[in-house]
Image (cartoon, rainbow, N blue to C red):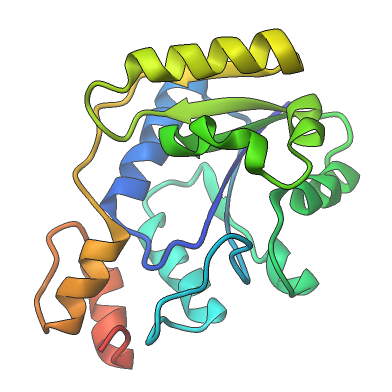
Length: 199
């Protein structure tokens, strides 16, 4: 079976994340699709005023509720500490030893993939599903894909996806000003209001 893994801080999960997930479902039709919010991002600190990890998990459940094919997983919450993707994939392999793994990432992540913790292990275990985030990225993506394929034996699939204009940074900024960001699902937005996050 094919298992797609879509991780991130999801701070907060927005319609751009949902748009990306839909593109993966349409293009790949995986047998399993796990959305895995990280407990502690390994490469950045969460912005002051960000919700606790458990709240980001609940917001993900709300944001992706329309997709019965998608399961939102708390896998990284049991491990605590920094949420390295390589560690998560190792743990998933114990649960799904026969599955083919597909790791969903944005174009910006492909361009710096060699900086990831144990990136060679990830390339040996996963096919990368790369989503474009901005217009005009095709050439740089193809070059980075060719280099990783040739030098690291990577398996990479570029997913056709019209970029969705959404930025977690911009959304957090708008929320801090008391504005209603258009790129937020209504139930996610109401959850944020009830708990006064990002204020």
